[in-house]
Length: 393
Image (cartoon, rainbow, N blue to C red; front, side):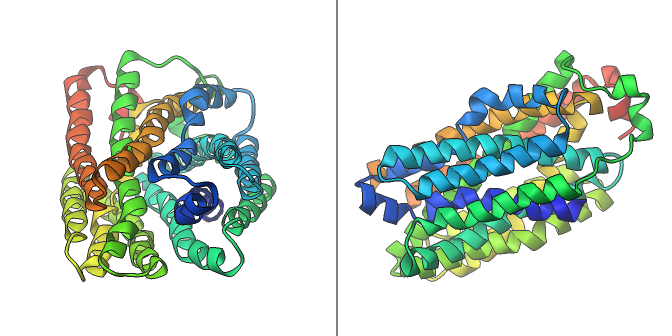
């Protein structure tokens, strides 16, 4: 099941990266500036601001695999609309449709994995799952530049659409829900509910902040790392290839880091060390000739704790509340990731310095450590009132 979820979820990163990888082509085709390109990138996240809670509520009535497959089909449709666009607003519409699909899929991919692995090796499983996102992005970083040059930028949207549609059919055909875990209790207790305690809501919001800041820093690296390397004299395809190495490295580092965390029981220390590594790697991009080393360090160290961070969701809420709780979690995530790419693009437009939005990314990674410590403080302060499912973990 984890392999199925991993392979299907790769389509999310592949579709997301389409606009970023052909940003220069879109700018030339439609006369856009980089803040507008950033807006197109951010539109992918915008539906989550409004639909996260309804998507979580839908889990009470519709099976997870149906909702997830719906998301994959919407991702495919959005890419088709963007690829056929003759005006920039149609590209934006396609990104919005894909964003609806992304919301449903990312919510239920996470919930499905938590359902399967809570009480087992959750950080390791989440490390494997979140690796699918950078894998899809890395494939796009390497492939879409070549596709744009060879057969046109529109196929950078069509190709991931085909993949997402195939993944949707695979989920419908092969996914099976796990048997009810003993700690979930009877069927009545396991039935999805909207009743979150104040403590659970607080923990969900802070966990979402940690994940959002982490991804905001990653997006700064993805979108402006290539521009910085191009300012050092690299060609567009070479610069994209160097930056993509960071995403390829994440494929190995996420699962490994999750495994180390599960074994050592020191997730907070590991996260702090990795965030220091992320900030150092981004700073290293400033030096000419250091792009490859910076990208490798960023992927192997800086982005390694993705599974540790997303595993916080399993600590924040009871099993029967996950669908609705994940809706709240993703609402915060989408708020950040719909606004930070345009903000980073605005910073670049104002300074014309590609390192300026990289500094913004460094700030985001520093705040990850602060937000994670906040999460642990909330847990420690309210430990006496901790629900039994959290105390058991």
